[in-house]
Length: 70
Length: 177
Image (tube, rainbow over all chains, first blue to last red; front, top):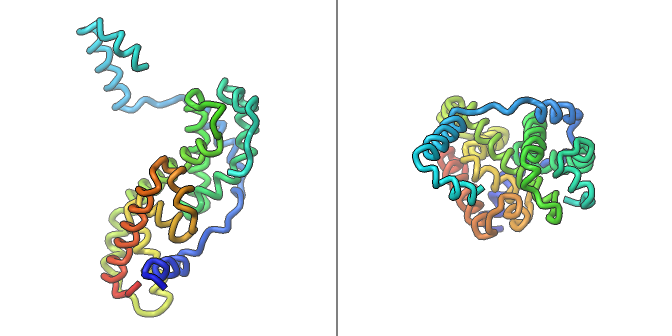
């Protein structure tokens, strides 16, 4: 038996492979409410948006570059 | 993923049709749940990851090309969500895990299993994910590579890094793997 096989056996004896089926609860209602929740803006998102606006105000011709990447 | 949703259903999903989304959820959630359970190894965390994965899929539906495999796309999203969950678990466990690791040395069989589990959970999330899928669940490298959008060679190298880290940690605990 190689070292890797031995390690694998040791791992499987401590953490048996998962035999689970589908979730015991129906998570669909949680998916729906998550999808309907308003998307929160992080500080990073707000900072990036502000940076883009500032750059476009300073260099309006870069709008084409931005449009190309979008 | 075994079931392949039809093209028309996928196009409706991309267009934002809620019924199509629910049909896809009903068709694939069991398989996604099984997959994420193999990674996070906890029922409640797997439920959270499942919700997160379908939400991310819904949010990013405009980027999905209905001519491609929806199952493979969804599995990649679910794998990334599961990896984020492992990172969050590690952050939450942070100091507790470090304290437990200091108290390690193993003697009897039960405590060997406990130490192995502890060493496994101490792996960095990226390595824990591949170790779980490759070494415990014995999934093929190609399947893991596809789920992570990585080349097979990268997965192999992560698995051997994980094995090396586990051996080191177990040796430190006085267990020779």
